[in-house]
Length: 167
Image (cartoon, rainbow, N blue to C red; front, side, top):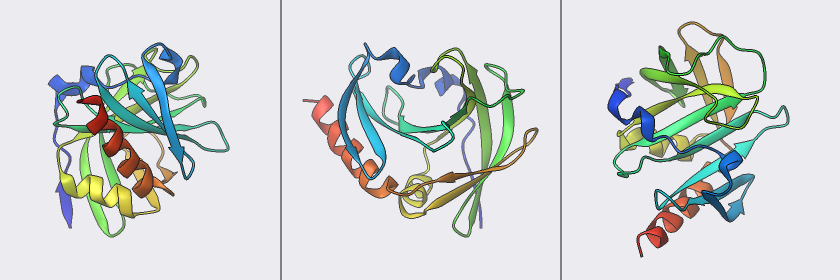
């Protein structure tokens, strides 16, 4: 089954940064290897996990809460340039989602590069929460695998955090 991640270029600039901008992000909690942060500017929350190699995965909502983002960042050498758009396929379970990734440098922890995808498809979020592995196949770079262990509980905690930010 093929699903499409929408190409939402206008929403690209609303991606939350990372813990490097600690003045904006307050620790909210942690669950199963994921840290939850409250963004004091956008009044929303994000989850973040780091693997044994220092790679970072972040997930959250855009400022209007209508779109979710998934970002993957590495300290390894990449050819990713800030703002570059690239076709990407993401495999979650037995489903393939295709869309567009936006490259980032400088808006995240110093020394990291990577990219993110935006989606307003609830099936993508449900699959991320339920699956344990996400395989990513960018058009130009090599494919890689992301460990999603603990995302179900982390997404639940982020949803609670998001509700509290509205109060």
